[in-house]
Image 1 (tube, rainbow, N blue to C red):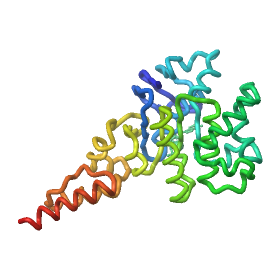
Image 2: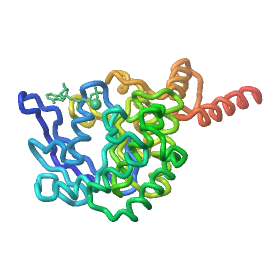
Image 3: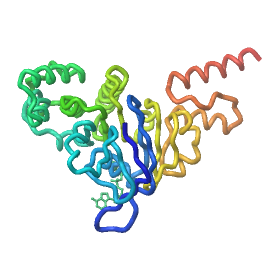
Image 4: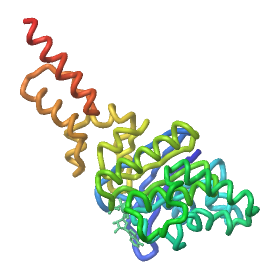
Length: 279
Ligand SMILES: Nc1ncnc2c1ncn2[C@@H]1O[C@H](COP(=O)(O)OP(=O)(O)OP(=O)(O)O)[C@@H](O)[C@H]1O
Ligand SMILES: [Mg+2]
């Protein structure tokens, strides 16, 4: 769905490589999380995925289209929808349903089809009840879900989200992540989620860690988070449960160390305690 080949990128006013030889193949229908500390190049990479930025070297293909093809810009932007960190900067309309209708209106979609898409997309993100509400009155999590509905109304194949939960409270974060997961699982939308929350990355099928514009780790969340020392040396954390298992193991306690979620951590501890009780 997205393929980069020897992708390099520098901003105009500098010779520093912000992206350095990135080779990445993102499968259709997958859910990929991209992690990296501040300034590692995550947002820059995301912007090359829908031709907001064009490669300085190498290529990016979106659904097989080379982002360098200027006359395909429109097709690329429709295929790959972007959601950014600050919902307030993305809102253009005063009323929720107008917000969702905005993109299809600009695409010249038939009014009856716009109506259908607005209803369907608000339903998908669980915001039907707020169709006639003022966008400004919503919580951060609700605004982000409306922003996602606005992107879905273009019927994209890929959803790229650049730290969509960074400005939200824990409840808003859960709402947004649940929505994203559902879109991926139920509608088969390819998701690329940039995040600095390790627990969110643990929800993905694949986690890619970048550092100084290079891919340094790439695999399932379990494979990636096994590299506790390396992840810490990159200035990142591991999920709390992984950290706990790691610390126990370091103290010589034989525990299943690849647990990522609270449930897995719980099972690992129970089997450890059960084992101890039987001795
Ligand atoms: N418009 C720009 N012009 C020049 N340099 C830029 C520009 N935008 C970003 N940079 C530089 O490119 C590098 C990567 O920035 P980028 O925003 O892609 O990182 P990031 O991983 O998204 O960081 P964050 O976690 O803070 O969002 C940084 O060194 C940054 O200073
Ligand atoms: Mg960023």
